[in-house]
Image (cartoon, rainbow, N blue to C red; front, side, top):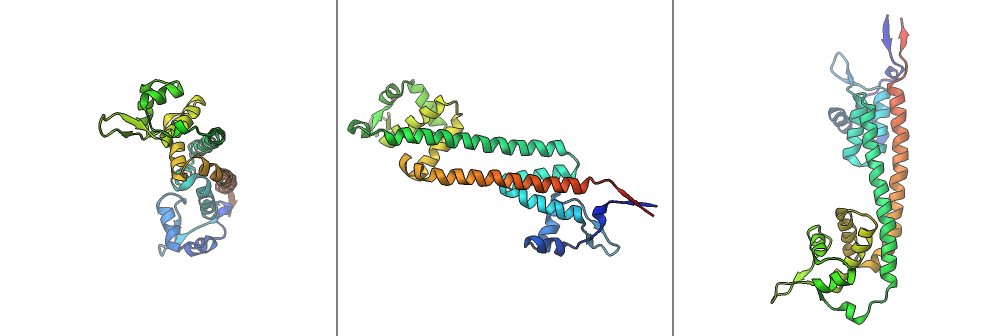
Length: 247
């Protein structure tokens, strides 16, 4: 009497799994080597024998990548293949937490940028100012601005004569935006990431036009996570089906 799983039916070669997803057979073998796929059985000639479990594992991994990235998806699959479902779920939870944080950041940036773009700059606001003037304008201490500089939020230049910090109009804009986000409870490293987006976009105005695309990308990521979860559930189900006894 022998004991097998239904997943042992429909044995596949590496090339069979590869063709379904437009991969090479070597890529499939590499995924097995890296633990993304469960270990394959070998024939007497040493050839790999993949089953439905391997097919669902590959489908799950490739679906997870779009929502969780390569590193996290690999961690998820390796944990599942070791039977450590709770570890895999913790990694998934972490990805969802990051997505939620990005959504909250986007909400805050939209609100802050709206305030900045609606405010008509006065002529004097375009002038470079020293740290004392900027601190007074924001209602913070100069030490706070220096802390923001160390965190990468502000990038003031130094006066060539006095060596004092000088904040340009763009620096003032960044400081005002940082101040709004800081009041919203955001961490300094998170604010630095937001300000980098503002600078890369060329200012608050151009950034406002790209926020819609940013939100679309977050929605796509969230939907990809749903698809990945469905494929992972199929794999777990295929890998844990009750055994069938055959004579």
